[in-house]
Length: 449
Image 1: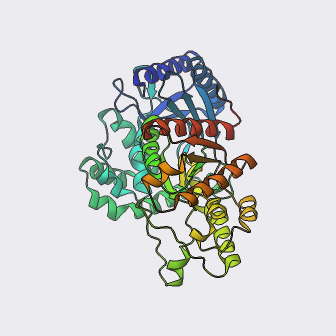
Image 2: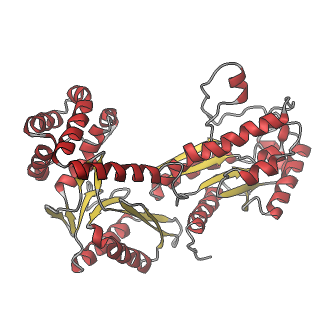
Image 3: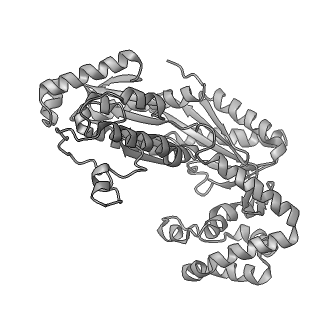
């Protein structure tokens, strides 16, 4: 991660915005500046200048060798610049925010800079709302206790703007109490009061501006819909790693998650086991246990006996893939969360008995009609080497599975083949490059070879 270079690029963007008289103010990401910069910068921009601000930022990112992905929502435009030169890839995320509301209350409708940190204008009220108030209104008090950074606070340069804002939205008495609780880090008092604060904020907003409040309810519903199963396809992909037992999927996935968390601005990276998991495993369901145990990556001997009702099993899994993607995976991807799968639906065609199926018939139908990962990456090695790592399958079975996987690759169902012929860190680098390529591919942006 090239922190000095990232800081220099962001400073250039801020200076260019100021020169073009863009009304902007940072709300989050400058806590460690100038020594470091946050995972991303949350920057409020006058709604009328969003396009110009976006154009300037994208141009500067490209001038510094970055390739740009953008995801636009009504309230925010996410700009991600990725640089793949010089060995280790790195990225910059800039979130241009037009407004911030809670229910009917428009907490921030445009940037109001109060002071500067270097070339960055800062909005003290927006910084407090983003860091503290939205968490309180959402009932996320436990997050403050768990955070290593001291976020439940009011910085000296924020006090005047925070007091004025809280009085405007909650009234003087509640503003005084809230400031006292935050300054004293009185978690218990906030935990008792946060629901009442939401009710008071809603009631006060409706009484003061009834028509605007109704309009904000529709705006809120539209924004929630954008992050719901009915929103557009997310800009962040899901990726599946496949291959026989012993090829090293779990090891590589753990390394990839760790490194991508450091290099790229994904808000979270999830590793899932072959399907979304909205519906519980059939075995647990039949036993009356609805809680699905978490996949811990430990070796489990694969099933070698088929079950009954193959068609019913396929339909059950189809429901999980279809509903699970729309209800679980898609909303995560829409908020810049990366999903990595250890196996996928195609595994049912390669080793149907493992999934309780007597044959792989019907898997092609399921694959074509249900959502599936944006890229399927096959890890490939010699059967003898795979067997030496994990002798759960015979060498003959491993060879047969690899042959079937390569047939799917030739048919276009598998996106890429990566040989596992080097250290896991080297293999992980190859996977990371494919994840970057997939991210740009689904956003219609080409990366250099």
